[in-house]
Amino acid sequence: MTNQDHRLGEVLLAAREAKGVDLARVERDTKIRERYLSALERGEYRELPGAVYTRGFLRNYGSYLGLDPDYLIDLYRLETSVNAAERPVAPTPPRPMSVRRRRTFVVTQGAVAAAILTIMVGALVAWLGYEFFNFARTPELQILQPVGDVAEHTGSTMTIRGTTAANATIVVEGLPENPSGTADAQGNFEMTLRLLPGSNEIRVHAVDPVTDRSSEKLIRRINVVSDAAASPTPVAVAMTLTQPEADAAITGAVPVAGTAGPAAQIVLSAVLVTPATPTFAVTDETGATVPIQPQAPTAPEPASVAADAAGAFSGSLALAPGTWDVVVTAPETEPITRRVAVRPAAGLSGTLTLDGGDSYLEVDQDGVPLDGVSGGISNDGDRIDLQAQSEMRIRAGNAGAVRLSINGISLGTMGGNGAVLEWRIASAGE
Image 1 (cartoon, one colour):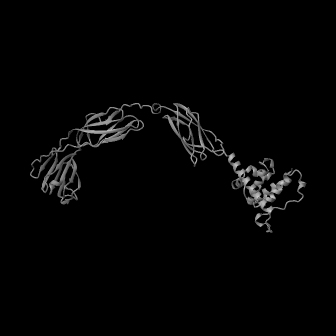
Image 2 (image 1 turned 180 degrees about the vertical axis):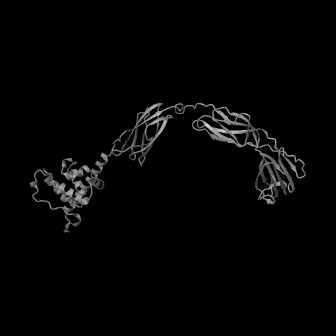
Image 3 (image 1 turned 120 degrees about the vertical axis):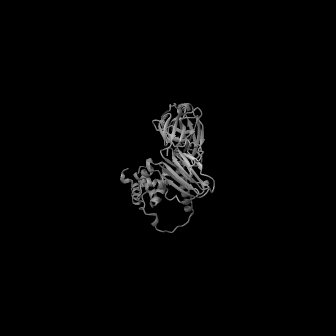
């Protein structure tokens, strides 16, 4: 049979190209396999599953292309007939179904029987096509967890999760205990597997409950290691301290520096040994010495610093004047303690705080009135910074609300509530 004999294929090809679709699109729309559509257009009828299937394909394909299915089936019969002369009458030319000529329809017993037979044949073709499609289907299987092989896994079990065909049976191979499971109606499944120490090769496939066909096997290799192998015991690294030096005399913040383990967390703290002796004198307006009872300074909260990748660390502690033990602690090491003497800076510096009420204030620093404060009323909660080289004069109209701290030493309140007092604070030797 030559290409000129395949008029059916030429009709189908021309109609499809006029519709502007490819075979892949036709397959999606008609559910007819692309290779069967191609065989019809090429006239290779031996590649089709059989005459019943082929006539069903032609009816569906013809309706999709807008051609008369009966005309297409006539062409098929002519081209597959052993003796073309058995059909002396040539089929009518193809015509779109939407423009067929109306003609009188007479209901006869034969027409009813033909209609019933046609419906039955169509239903049979549809059922056969559905069964053929399902029979040829292979379930897909995806393992979502773990996504790949696992080089190190601690523990004797692992949970695998994935998706496949709805209600498919999940089969596991390769383990001493090979459990099986069933996917849910959406195809999701989850199974916990018992593993052996060392290398485990897990082979998983799914069986479709409709076609009884198996998916491709997926393999995961899981290497089970002990906790000790996965997390080796860290080796302790000795800590060294370069600052502060032992018995150092320091003015200002105490620097702390040294080395420890890489990325170690270092804790800096301090313990007061003895408070500092005041380096200044306090007298009243008559020149009489004012007895003061300095309050012991409070140790600051411990500070934390992190060592870098090489183990180096540095930080500082702000300590009041006095003698302190600086304690440096790192994980897995003995703490290091350094004793230092913290001295105040030269001159006089400190704070005046209003606590418990307002007060009239006169504040002179080295004989110069403090701008914005001296000669006015300061309010409860105000904090005033003080700084002088040699001398301060402070006069308070409500001495019980005025609290002083000079050179890091807390002097408490100047006097009682409502008392009018004047203090002269001078550096030692002035």
